[in-house]
Length: 362
Ligand code: KG4
Ligand code: ZN
Image (cartoon, rainbow, N blue to C red; front, side):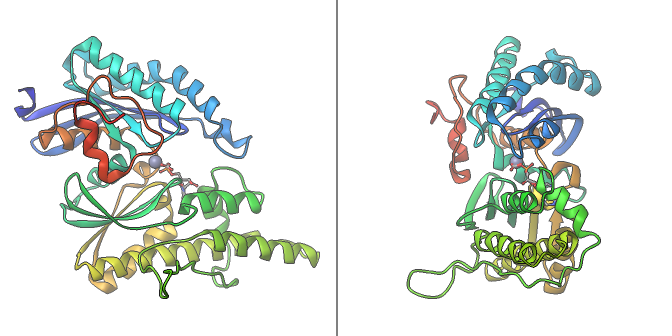
């Protein structure tokens, strides 16, 4: 089997949303190396519509991938013949966008007679922390905060995931995007709010922390809800507008960003403490937020929990994390995915191993 080699090189593709990305990744004596990682962002094109337009996303992936694959290989110094496997995100995400990456990946794999690995997008985000220096080894708790997900995941072993908490409504990134729109800030909302918040007073407005009630009393300690916070922001803006005062965008942005960070940090550390986990990992687009990064690190230190955060460049969608996840699967001895594997807009992370089964799950 090729996979007993000490060196493995994969080409990986990510097209689940609005970033077309290709990477060339290598596993070298147990270490993951980035040989090339390119991202062609479509953000400016979607920004004029205030959010991602699925049809436009698929078309742009289709146009961008051929040159991205060529350029990534060139940058990596590798010939396609030297590649051991091809990986592409197959779930979850926008159906049309996923199809473009999947078809391109399977075609590259078939033409070059190498295995194809369909990768779960969230498993990719989880692997992004392995691109940091001094990456931790499982077991650890992961806070995954992106545009589509806010989850606390116990990683017992590589590729063994147990969800301990989740959002009951909006994901944290989605809340950033919606609140940005409310404040007339551009899409994507996270970076726009972060920039405004720099000059704002984070304690000017008191905002709700969105606890999720249990049907028979009490709260789900590790779950999240951001819809009440979004409504509270709307009410504040409306009442300021009604009094004809200038909207204090900077203070509103800072207060919102601060309360989201507090909720994420408090519930993650509580969960880590309750489960006796000494390592906490943070990944996903929202993990790029500097206030959140600082708060998680400093409060973790107080609690005696080591906090590991994905490098900022690999928090938002990229193909390096997809390649890293594929390399881990290969190292653990997963067989390749079936070339008949399709795509799925929704698929649970704890079902990710089914992507390597035959017959495929979808
Ligand atoms: O992980 P990601 O690129 O895509 C998904 O898988 O969803 O995350 C995108 C989300 C968007 O909602 C965006 O507003 C948010 O991450 N985001 C941020 C920051 N950068 C991106 N949120 C807060 N602060 C940031 N600096
Ligand atoms: Zn993502």
